[in-house]
Length: 433
Image 1 (cartoon, rainbow, N blue to C red):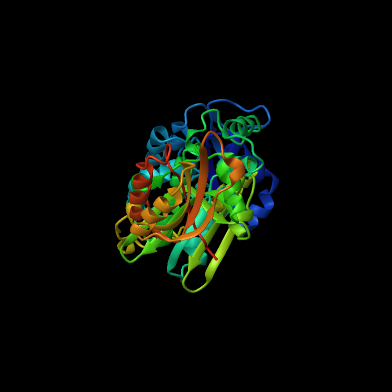
Image 2: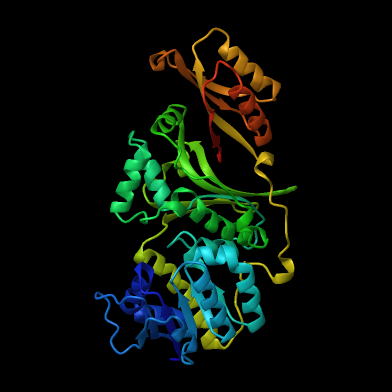
């Protein structure tokens, strides 16, 4: 059986899981790949006592893997932007195939990396960068290749989903975030998770694979969950909705929506039932309809599962001395076309609004008039006398679907009323049924 040699850069959570699964399931993996996958070099900043490398050469310089002429496939698991970009481009220049779990790298530098790889005739595989162990990239690029993808929406950050799940019990954001960090679900610096950057990286990649457009992370609208309160989460629940942090990409005739933000989804919808650190991506295709991909979006061996799936795909090509099997983004270079990414004021959504109003006659009439003048219809309204305090009472509205430009104008006019205190809270709502 032909031997395909692998060099692993990074022996952290995912790198350690990759080594362990490759060893535990070696015979099974080789049988599926049609060749023997052998780790011939490792580079890691700090050695792990729980992983025995034996006689595998190891160093702290990741570029040693690039310089090793024996390595066929470089596995990039170091994360980050700059060093990872330099490493991957060096591997490509050396004629090595690349497998990466680095969504930030692909979302920001993927266009450059894929162009370099195409020129050298090597494969760059990145399934593990999106949704951990869920094979959603393969599903979009291959399983749904016959479909025009209309839209996709996903819970694609487990940390954020865990926090929102726990906040349904009335716990404040900061308390749950600290717990998520203690449990290892959130990093010491959780900015990418709670501000939506991580989800935007993943959404950018999925949208490009779904719609055949260049990677355009810088155009994605990104809004995090830090400002959400248990009050709004519980009142959304009373209206029949769950608050989820979604990445949404939709293909329209006039452009593409590319947005990450807190979103109300119906409690009885399957997306509303995905709790804890799990991920879920719903994809709507014109031929197949809606398909759901659900499972662990992170974790050592879950993500390693996707890394090794890519290794098997690449190893098959190496063993057969064939060219790339699947285009990088699922479309041939000539079919990748730039489309306008729509600004947020052109997207359409329903809206949850919370207005802190003074308890005075005619306040609701003024609010209703503003909404009507902006072409916005109210689906439901909630006002509880039990919440009256210091002459103020919250008014909660759920609107029908309108253009965001309309809701922005209405919010500005409501905030200008003497009867309204502070900012109007706004959460977008989607109904995928």
